[in-house]
Image (cartoon, rainbow, N blue to C red):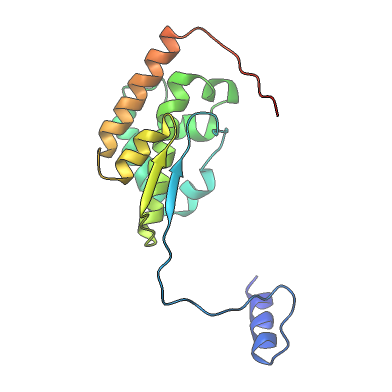
Length: 166
């Protein structure tokens, strides 16, 4: 809270830095950042709710994506992103466009605070968000492509399984 912050700053200024206080020097050299956009599988019910509630840039990007995906999804994008049961969100035809919208909203938020990646890479459906980040594709095209991809995969691919061996 604000009171604790003020106490910590006063202690630090008096030379009595506590364990929770970190300090250092800022580098004049800008940091080089690369972004990795993951594929399907990282989704969870409620993902991004706090960002949507607290960050206007994130909310605007989700709302813009919702307009594009309105006819492609069985329910409004924010409802699927924040309130859908996990079983629905795990369906390929839902999770791929929802995941792409989430990643594009995160990209918009990152850019709004000055994060400019020098490299991007995507895995699977994350390729679409990476293509937008690299200015190879625009957001609406990426969203519609993800929706089509997810729908085709849901319709054409039989359920499968995966085994991981360490």
